[in-house]
Image 1 (spheres, rainbow, N blue to C red):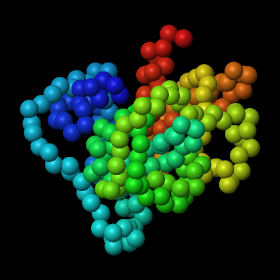
Image 2: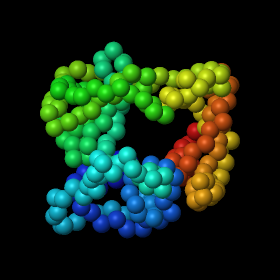
Image 3: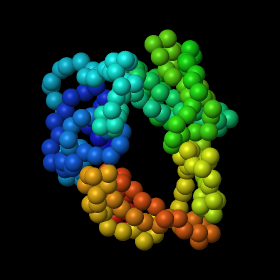
Image 4: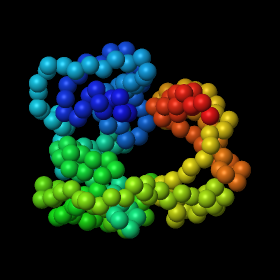
Length: 235
């Protein structure tokens, strides 16, 4: 990730060589392209003199969104999602249109603190909620973001107990959780059929400090990333 961010900063053009192309699939696809690009250790990224400041949005008509059929609903509408934490460790999901993404990333870089004014607050809902906050923050044209002198390097993880995960009821299952552990029994990256499409998958187990283990599974590029990461680790 750091290599790509340095070589290909947001809004700049570049030339990318030696990439892998895999069939795109699954829910919530960010583009309509039939393939997905995977950047690996062999990939070479270099700058380009091309200058074009278009933002390349494919804006959806509000009236058409409610009429979307199942085949079209796998594609994401252009929004940028994030999780923010305050100085007390309370987290909230936030989003903005992609037209504001560069503004947010410049004013509020990852790991830095800031002051955000004039936001919209909407009720949070749906499956796979990233926080337990009852509201979701929306950053709009009227929002003002400025820096802060606050210094706090906590990562604000809410780690779940392995033993309690299997006992989670349906009401709690809508929330995403944080876990930490040692990777054990890492399997091979396999190509399997899922929802009628070929997808990469790897299965493994996480072990905590008490010896409890948790079966895990990663899909797509995440499967390839963890395999490459483990191979580079000495311990």
